[in-house]
Length: 235
Ligand SMILES: C[S@@+](CC[C@H](N)C(=O)[O-])C[C@H]1O[C@@H](n2cnc3c(N)ncnc32)[C@H](O)[C@@H]1O
Image 1: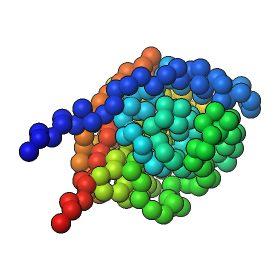
Image 2: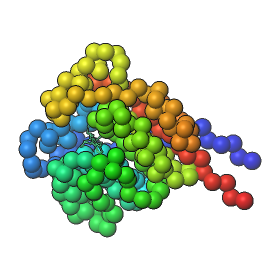
Image 3: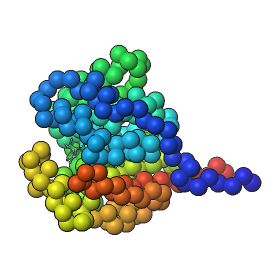
């Protein structure tokens, strides 16, 4: 029997293109500050690394998709065959829909949709080959975090992955810098979820941890996890 590839070998390391140029071409209107955040997000967050962790040809559910930058990167890189983004912010969804309209002129026929909804209201039915939740959990009230995590994990079908990323809660100065960022940008006092809780809840949901990474970019600290649900064994 052929040896199983190491988990790292399953993650495509191909370059993801110029994310800044893509963002500048898609996010061309609306208020300046959110627009600049999209244009420069790849400088403060490991967007390319997250893109590389989504299996080629996935059908994706992106929870807390914001203005749709992550979905756009995946479409532009040809990594997803369909994508559905959901977000609690109506203006973020409007931005994502406008960006998707521009993207469609370059990648005709792509199946990309965005929906306005909070994860606590429940997620669209069905199972997905890839579910992502990037920098969302610290915006969710602590009493709703476990439910939101399990709701997301529950949408991963057999053999699929759950890409979870959030801002680190340590060291204190990095966590504090991000807290300041969210006070200014989201006008919100955020609540970090310890990454150990995410690992525990993933195991509860029947997922296996495949990737665990920390990235520091400028004064921001990031924690990435990729969990996988075992494939069904044919009888
Ligand atoms: C820091 S942004 C990240 C956006 C996107 N995931 C990205 O990486 O570019 C956090 C997003 O989570 C959304 N969000 C916060 N609470 C949410 C909830 N309860 N349900 C769904 N989305 C939520 C916010 O509206 C915001 O767009």
